[in-house]
Length: 385
Image (tube, rainbow, N blue to C red; front, side):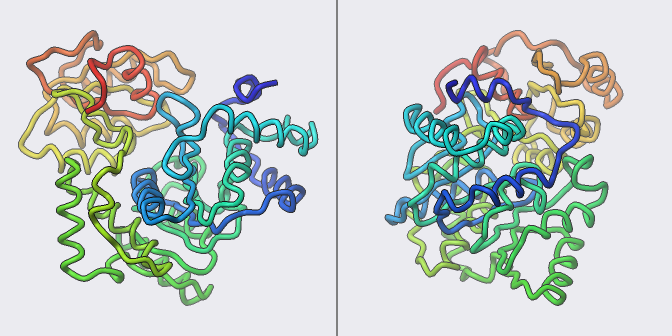
């Protein structure tokens, strides 16, 4: 069967995960794939943009590099990027056929959607110099954690996926940082994360570097100018500096002009004159959005997965929102609309169901990849700018 047919049989969401399954499967087949040097990205927010900044830069200076990220916006190919472009349908099918021949049927049936696509990606990336590999749910138990890592990048850690990772920042940070092997670069963190990193450094001999360790004040100023020139909000500066710190870690110099054409899909992406799209879906992302929209008010096109803290997200976003327009989505993970409406009312925001974009209003489409996908497929007023 084709890759698409095979993946259609796999659920995209699991309420329980067998953490031992994929490490055992990888142990059986690891000698069939030569894995490049891995730069693992863990954290709660900013993994996608941090990883793309790094992969883009390495590609621009001539390094053969791949970037594995998830989920995708419109097409599965977006998850597997190599040497400047998304993997082609032909390349995906070639490596899918290869894996179907090598892996036992029992293991093929057992693997989750994400586990199989992780294996598919590493097969496609064979022969590259580096792979920037973004974790899915977390850290030590993530499918991406089975590979030997040359470096781990830790983007800001906050609350998300509590059912799997823990209910406190400390619990979540430990689960994520347990994936670090020897070296890690820390993005901007809260005090509890720095404290745990210090503890892990002492007990496990891990070397943690704050991203600022790699830069002069002049270089940080160049990073801020780069983000302004890209038309992105200021909070992306930390992501850029964190990502490119990894290039510096491996001995590469930074030429900031090479970042002028980087594209971040779904990350504060202006897809029309009056519409910005962002795939953020947790309180930390909402706080960053509020900073970006300070002293402005928008119509929020929104929906939420049932396991997200959408009440807190709406409370955070309230100062910049004049009205919420609920984007209808028919997905097993999406919250019941009546519950979402009750939450919006409790925050004190007016709401209605989304119908269309009005030319004289400013819109923010926010709330997960599912919201972004639905909007882009059916409602987007024009091509991304």
